[in-house]
Amino acid sequence: MRAFGFRFANPGAAARVKVAVACRRSSGPELRLTRLERRLAVPAAGFASAVLRCPRQTTPAGSGVDLRGAGVTLRRVTANLRGFSFTVHNGAGKLATAQLYGNCLTAVRPAGAAAEPLRVEITSFTDLVSPGARALRHACRRGWLSLGTGYALRGPDVDVRAAAAVGAGGRWRVSNGSADAATVVLQLVCARLG
Image 1: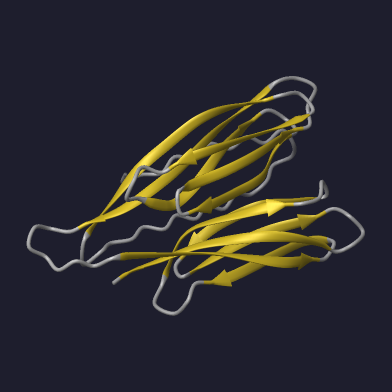
Image 2: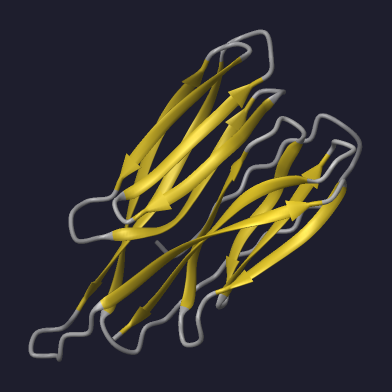
């Protein structure tokens, strides 16, 4: 994969959009991506969940979602060493769809080259979010790079407006519409060769 595609919809007033893309070049093994994709039907005023499983000998390396319809929100996107889990909520009165995406990574070494293992670490952080919008950051261990971000939302008043794996860390933009502080679980997938 050498390109990224984005689609934006805005039913309200004009707004700015920021896009973050991380491209990595390996001086060692070739890093190969396998793209996963699934369409998810979300019932009216309900939730739907799905799993995308990475092929054997690959690891999760970032996910995405295309939400279609007003009132459709992503409530959970998390990774484990085998793939991705998604939960989508539909607050509208009719059926909606979501397109789920995942990238799975493997390191392939040239014939005769020394083996370098691809090490992956998935860490979850529980953050307390005050009312309003907040920018949160977490970092990978020194010498590691971030592959992906995730999150799980517990209350209906909390929403993640943006999440990106950038450099050696993750960034999230979290909104809390309640009058009280609320918790959010953020996830960071980190990796290193060797």
